[in-house]
Amino acid sequence: MAVVRRFEDLVAWQEARSLAKQIYQFTERSEVRRDFGFTDQIRRAALSIMNNIVEGFDSGSRLEFIKFLSYARRSASEVQSCLYVALDRGHLGNEEFVALLKKADYARNLVAAFIRYLREKGRRDSGKPVAFKIRHNRGLAQSS
Image (cartoon, rainbow, N blue to C red; front, side):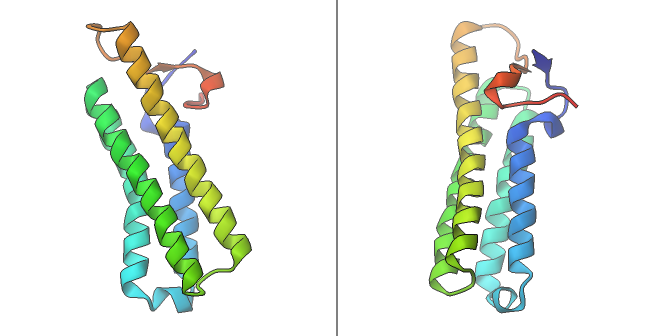
């Protein structure tokens, strides 16, 4: 088991960071950049995934962590919804759309798995202090 000491060790955060990077690259294209409202919205949603994971991690409470992870999961869904708008507006082709949609879905699924893990851990460890020991095989954390 790896002990997660920093939010940077969380695979969910790493994937959210990678998604945000790709979203920023996509929205830097001139035809997308001119769609100010869309660009701002999808960037905010992508950043929100990362930031909510971090806020929850730093909360010191399992329940608060779960609450912020739920926000992160919803933000990943928002990115997916925005990608459909981008496809409909012709900002990206089908292949790129599918790749970004899958990346957002993967990040969303990692966050959802983390929520399930913390809920289950809460049932097992009711009353114990929060500890972020996470198994490697769950894909939730990796050692640095």
